[in-house]
Length: 301
Image (cartoon, rainbow, N blue to C red; front, side):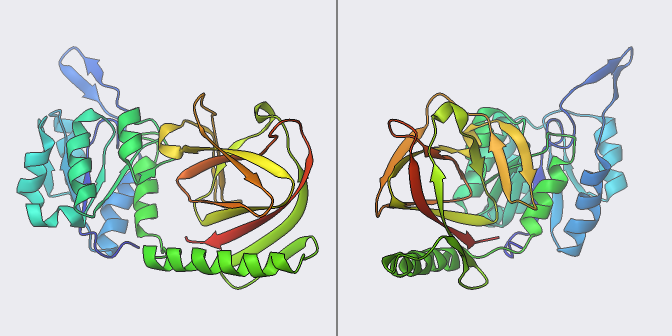
């Protein structure tokens, strides 16, 4: 859990609904809300002593009724300039105690202010590109389909703090360097409760045949023992999901993009890949070839 968060601030349309406006002869007729989101807003946040806050650009009696049903007391509707309202509601000194959940450009100013103050920002999978790029967490789920629940559960989940993450990565690199100096046999080496190293032989292939993947619970350390490989890297916030995250396997697959950063690893070199780094490993530098690698999995979540 992120202990300093005291407020969960969210939009409605495009975050807790699918963003569609269903109009009847008398105006707005209905909105669809996820029961999963409702449970998270009314129960999970309450258990964590986090206050839900709604700031939305539209005005709707349906929203008023849904928020009343969920016990959300702070509801501001018809707000297009959201940052002044956010400051008014939580106080400028408390922006760093906010988790902000947005989906469109009207949310960007709030997201930037919260992020700069040390808070956390998230968005549904189908948020606009600019919002995805600004988010600390991009959901697998679309708006109105449980994305709010997903972000709240991620927010409340146990996690390793940044200083500990850096320490673990440093220790992992030192351990792998010493380990590989002794030319270990292929196999899986469980070093401790947060580091596993797999040494194996694989074949590189053309990029068109490789998949772009990311992990949430682990930092990957990709180390070349023999041969060479290229790895394409892109921020998950700039991508669209191809296969949703599988928590058991700790992997999600992404649609490839035309422009990615390419890193070429040769014998003795390595790269550290964080949860935000979607990566396509084992790309042939010239022609497909057999290589030997060590992959360190550093648990961070």
